[in-house]
Image (tube, rainbow, N blue to C red; front, side):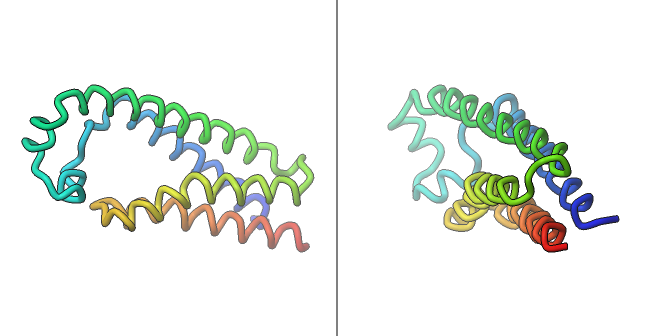
Length: 141
């Protein structure tokens, strides 16, 4: 398997993951995870009492956020499926920027928050970096 094919497959996996994560945020994610009140230094009951509309507002925020995640995944999939036919350097720049602003930012923020899911959310960022390295290797040949 060539480096470009391996990079394409990793990017496709990351795109599918982003679409799935977006669907999770739209349909399944609760307004507050157990780690959220812990980070805020309050109990869930205190938060609900002081901000009664927060849960409804967060549902809307996470729906929008999930839509953007899914859109990012769809665009990643489209770009990944056409990597072989695109000019390599502009595609590489696009994938660097897309990865840094999506899975890279998400992973970094989850470490700052000491999220219960931080190590799991590091996986897509590492896979993205591996795909970038393979893409660079393919371009260099």
